[in-house]
Image 1: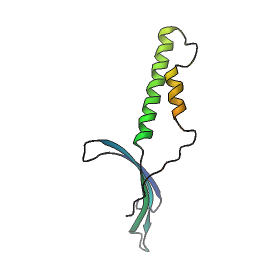
Image 2: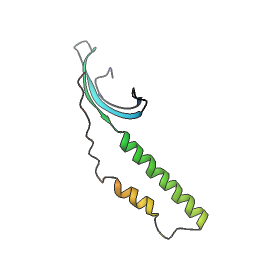
Image 3: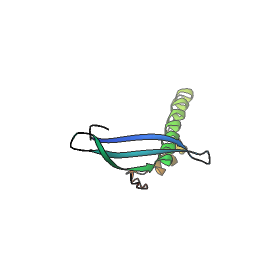
Image 4: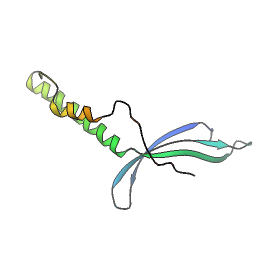
Length: 101
């Protein structure tokens, strides 16, 4: 971040109520004339739901592969995989809260 270039980071946080949330942050550190960090600008978005859906989709793919190995080839895609894939947006439009630093 000391270089003044753009950065992205994902963090797992535990809220006061004990729930686990995933946050994605992106921004840039603005440098002064001597190269020292002067200020940072960026946003932070809650991506917990996206990560949960991704994990469920990967698990469904694993289960489908195991089913194919055990059953000698499935005739189609499992209904769970189809319904889960239908729930994923074709274009992800993340809506998060902007924070000032």
